[in-house]
Length: 414
Image (cartoon, rainbow, N blue to C red):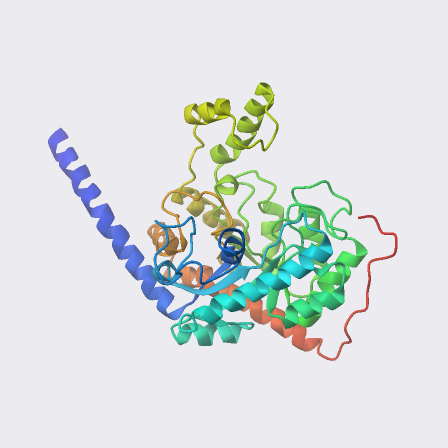
């Protein structure tokens, strides 16, 4: 009996890799006709910080995983079945708003130069129809997403210019509370959106720019969903009930997504999807404080190097990614879940999710858990395309409205 059980386990172990390969092949076949649209990739910022803002400084046409720290290149995008990518034009929240506006326009230029450097692979997209057309032609639709409302410098005129330049969403905040919206990771000032923040959302509706609620406080989420006539998105957030991080989406908001019509694009940031990984950071900081080492000290103190060797940071896993996707589906519904990896915006990634080629593995794991082909198509891209079309429809219904002239009131607190 024992021998027969051991033989059965061995046979199952041998069969699992083949089953995984079959699942990934099936996922790639699905992605031939449904574009996988990732909500957030920081390759433009990575090029700016590490490669002189030059898309020719690295050979994106080669697999770069062994020669650079990049998570993204064309072979891995192809292997991952990526059909549409929102390139983040992130600039730091520490900049002044005027500096942020300038550097965001420069980041938009970076996206355009990436596309121009590989015209046989990428094409700029600004509409849902563009994405489907470009994907059908065998290319990767390149969309632009802004990360941080401070980049509009409190100007609806600049907001409109960013839209003209191709940006199709704005994450209302980043790590800091702005002059009109509260961040999830900073002290609140407005209890959500200020009156001018509500004006920003309305003008985004009018021009057809998606309202992205990743990084914002729960109160800002609720305010934005109340004010917006179009569905909202979370371009790269996970589920707070699974990992209690303020960057994640609480169940109360997930339950509201069905009425809103929006989509939560689950991210893969280890500290957002693994409690053990999240808890390691405070433990590291506590040890630094105990030793009297200044936060952020460089070079790293040898005592902390020894501590890290003795207390390595726990890795997040593919199973963690799947758990968050499953939870968003269970609470918000299958029509309201998507994917937003945050590749090239983080220093580490989950096991088995080390680059943009990981999507078939994720989809195969979901199919092994019972997801249908229809479910996978919705997750991969259909949900986001539906939201894009809804945002476009709201803008079309407002085509006769004049641009808003709202301004931040003089003397408003910063």
